[in-house]
Amino acid sequence: MSPRFQFTLHATDGKARTGVIRMRRGDIRTPAFMPVGTAATVKAMKPEAVRQTGADIILGNTYHLMLRPGAERVARLGGLHKFMNWDRPILTDSGGYQVMSLSDLRKITEEGVTFASHLDGSRHLLTPERSMEIQRLLGSDIVMAFDECPKIDQPRDKIARSMAMSMRWARRSRDGFDAGGDHAENAALFGIQQGALDEGLRRESADALRDIGFDGYAIGGLAVGEGQEAMFATLEFAPGQLPADRPRYLMGVGKPDDLVGAVERGVDMFDCVLPTRSGRNGQAFTWNGPLNLRNARHAEDTGPLDPRCTCPVCATYSRAYLHHLIRSGEMLGAMLLTEHNLSFYQQLMQGMRDAIAGQRFAMFAADFRRDYFAR
Ligand SMILES: [Zn+2]
Image (cartoon, protein in one colour):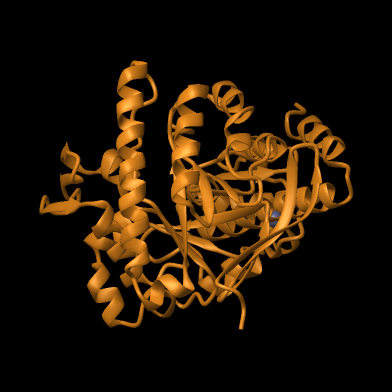
C-alpha cells in the first residue's frame, strides 16, 4: 500500500527543489500546481480532462461545499472523490480565507468565525474543530489548518495578535484532525504560516507550527494585494523558516511569473483560480505572455494559441476560431481556453521540475522571463 504521506526530494538547484509526495491516492510531483475545483468541479472541465493536463492533485473549497451541497450530504454520497469523479489526491482549504473574503456579517472570536452565507444569508459558525470535521466528511487527502488571514496593511500589533490566534487555532486543528480516526490514518494535515510581510512574525509563526508538527507547511497571508515585489521579498525568508524536509505550499498563487519566482525561492506547491477564471474571461497564458482573445488582431489568425504548447487545443484550433467563440459568448470558448491554460500551467511546472533535476533552473527562469515579457 502507498504511504499515508511521504515527501522525497530528488534534486535541489539553488533554493529550488523538485521531488514527489507519495499518498494513498497517488503521487504528487513537485513543484506542483493544483487547479481549483471550488464547487466540486474545476469549472468548464471534466475531471478526466483535468488529469490529462498533467494535474496530480486538485483543490476543493470547504466554504463553498459546506454551504452547498453541504459536507454531511457529500459524506452520505460517498465523499468528494466519488461525488465528482476524481480519484487522485484532493487538498481542501479550511474555509477561513473564504469566510473572510466572501461571507457577510462576520464576527471573529477565539472560538471561531460566525458568518452569514453569501448564498442565502443563513448563519454558520466555523471553528477549527468544525473545519476539520467538514474536511474529514469531504474525504480530503490534504487537510488545511483553520486560520485567520488578516488584511495585509494593518499595524504590526494587529497582525501579531491575529497570527498568535491562528497558531492557537493550528493546535486545535491538529487535535481535531488527530481525533478523526480512520481519516487521520490516511490523510495529511498542513499548518499555515502567517505574519504578513514581517520576518520576525513569520519566524514566530514557523516555530509555533514546527512545535505542533505538520505533514507540510503553507505560507498563508500572501497574494492578497501586496504586489509581486513585496511577495518575493517575503519569500526571500519565509520558505527557509519552514522545515526543509516538508513540502512548502504558497496559497493562492499565482501568475506564471509568480510561480517561477516562488519556485526559485524554495516553494513546492501552488493553487490559483487564475488559469481557469482567465480562461472563462477570454485570456490565454502562453510562453510569450498572456493573450486577450477578444482582441481583433486574432480575428483572422490561423495559428495556434501557442506554437510551443503541446495541448489538444493548440493542436486543433486556430486563434481565429477561439476569438470567434469568445466574442460570441460561446461556452466552448471558455472550455477550450481553460483546457489550454491548465495545460500550459502544467507544462510550466514540468519545465521547472526538469530544469531543477538538470541543475539548470537559473537558465530556465531567465529564458522564461525573456520570452514571457518580450513585446
Ligand atoms: Zn495549448
